[in-house]
Every structure is written in structure tokens, then in C-alpha cells.
Length: 159
Image 1 (cartoon, helix red, strand yellow):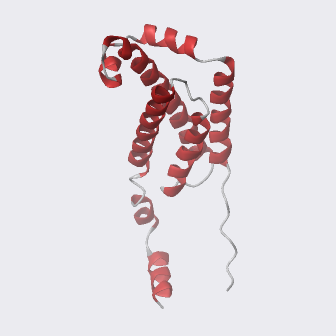
Image 2 (cartoon, rainbow, N blue to C red; image 1 turned 60 degrees about the horizontal axis):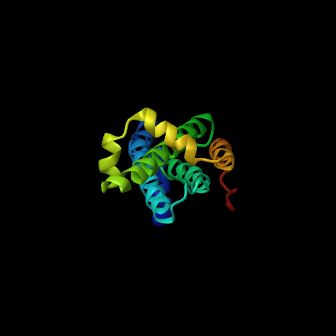
Image 3 (spheres, rainbow, N blue to C red; image 1 turned 180 degrees about the horizontal axis):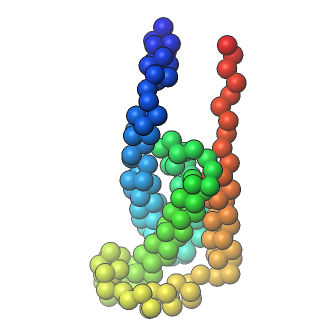
């Protein structure tokens, strides 16, 4: 009874009301990307490795966040997923580099990140990442694109 009532209400709602409920998609994506980059940084500093395999999880997480926010599968979701995954990879690598340099000076990673120059960070990041790490980063971008493009169709109704 309640489900039928909700269905009839949602079918009478204008399209702009449905799209207006999706205003939180990009803030949710930014929050998720920042949290994932922070968790990746902490794990990498704890293990003293780059943990490039986490980029594959980051790609899946960004697509999941976009799907939960209601963005339909297609080029738009794939583009947002690839861009956000690339940002997570870049941010995590920068913060890992800052954390490693900061250890030498007794600084926390976020304190070191404020003082680390982009050229020096780029040099240290290139030295820290192996060819396999770069392959994992490229695979994660492809995974984000593939998962973003694919969209499950709703199951057929039993009615």
C-alpha cells in the first residue's frame, strides 16, 4: 500500500525535482576522494611502500560513489570517475612523498606537504614508483572508465 503510494507520488514529480535531489553528487565525490587519498597515504606510510594496488580500489570506489549519488552510467559518469581517480592517485602520491620527506625533519605529512615544492615532489614520486606501479595506475584509470560506462538495467518487473 505504502509502496504504491510512493510510486504514484514519484511518477507525478517533475523532472527538475528529481534532478534537484542529486545536488550532493559532486560534494560526495570530493569527500570520498579526499578520504580515500588520506587512507591510502596512511597505509603507505605505515607499510613504507607506495601501495599502488589501492588505485584499483580507488577507481571502483569513485564509480560506486557516483552510482550511489544517482548519476546514470555513461560517458559523463565515466569521465567523472576517471578524473577523480586520477586526482586520488596524484594526491596520494604527493602526500606519500610529503610524509616520507617530513619524517626526516620531524614534520607531519600535512605540515611537510605545505612546504614541499612541486618539482621536488614530482622527482621523488617518479623515483618511488616502479614500472609496475605505473601499470597499475593506468589499469585503474581504464577500470574507472569501464565501470563508469557500464550501467545495469533495472530488472524486469514481475507485474
